[in-house]
Image (cartoon, rainbow over all chains, first blue to last red; front, side, top):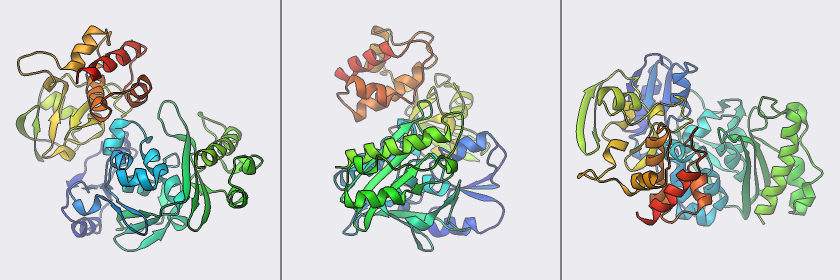
Length: 264
Length: 153
């Protein structure tokens, strides 16, 4: 690891100030991706700003609009939350299948979204459920948040504070796991939300994406058969040692059908 | 930078380089070498300890992140009089280890597992231990040990 200056601010304002002080700072949430990257020298921030002491970033609040989850809430907390299990079970189960137990005890919602790993699970939840990302500067709709591989709409100095998930009528997330890393080779969140059907796919491309053709078919007929003949062209999908683009294309339809079945 | 925390019930404090990983602090500064470094990339779970009651991988956490935390390592699991924790006893009785390298992490992870799933099925045990890799045993006796320990915890 390259050397860095470390700070642990006690408030959001202090963290934002630390971010704007110049250099090449990085926010540290659960560290499950960042510390690993720094160990490999793939990341070398000049300053590490640990968000672990900022209590206003934690917590799960059930409200009329939906469930608002603090950015520093650990995956394990989301998975065992009675509120999330009752109102958005697909989200609880997605959080409960991220990585492994130890990762889930440290990893955070905000950290996962800000990192936007192409094979992470939470982006599919946010895009698939039509959630809103609340930062210290504004609120960003899911459709506007994910820009590309490891790239989001977050600007310099912007910190995710919470994410508001509207409660869907029905939803399910099915993931085809890489058996070693437990990341998604393909993961699909299918949801009938208050504002229409959403199908979000992670793991398959450079960033999470929706499948409008599947959404349209499901809007008139929520069944696996309705989307059996719909596939995403392999051309835009990832090809790597784990799966070819063609196999990923095949998996998208299979996982989407399973998600639709599971969400009935 | 100065850090302090409680490790196995004892208050400790030290001066560390900011880059010091929690596993290095535990092994090198505190000389508690029961926690092992297996892969160093956060995948094998041999470095698993408890931080504030939760199982975490200490090779993927900075010592600084554990400031003020309550840390439990494998050395702190047995009773004060030296008798083994039910999980350790079950691993012994059911031959849940061969070379023993993954074992401290496996045991710490399993204790956390049972705390969260007091009566785990074999399926649950196998799923919940997927962050701990073992090259020797094929997991069969590990699962038996965890099932047996759960009944005694």
